[in-house]
Image (cartoon, rainbow, N blue to C red; front, side, top):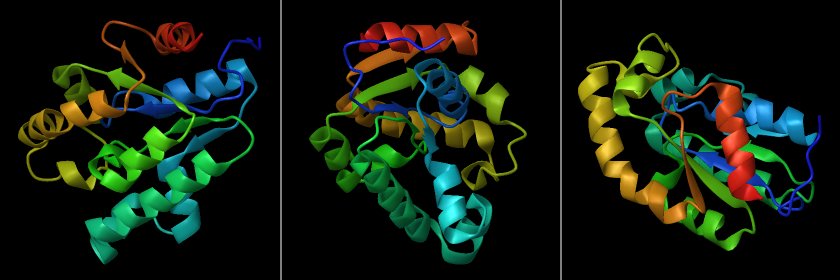
Length: 176
């Protein structure tokens, strides 16, 4: 079922920590709205021919972050409204925050409790930042990024105790 709404000509950008459900919710939103899902991690992997982990291991974080900016800029520049599932660290770059602010996209922060995030990402082999001490790292990441997510978000949707479909519905309501 396709839904029409006031932001019909805007991209919807989902931001949030790894494990918040950006890709999963993005797929549901894209299907409901009849839009393409642009997942930044998938775009980076297609562009580079490497997995996220391979990029981190071979080229390092700066190379990954540069690709992250390239694909965000490309996605936001698209004339066709889409759903964009942005990488968790997209807000770390001032350039990315400017891209989001200068676009007419509707940016939604999918907010999740850190304990929920830990449950979701514990076995994620593609998450190189969590290799050493997932819990401490994830908690520190949340604390350092929380104000950045707030800075870029037009709306905040809690994912705690909600199904993917419920979160997608909440995103649609806040964008209407």
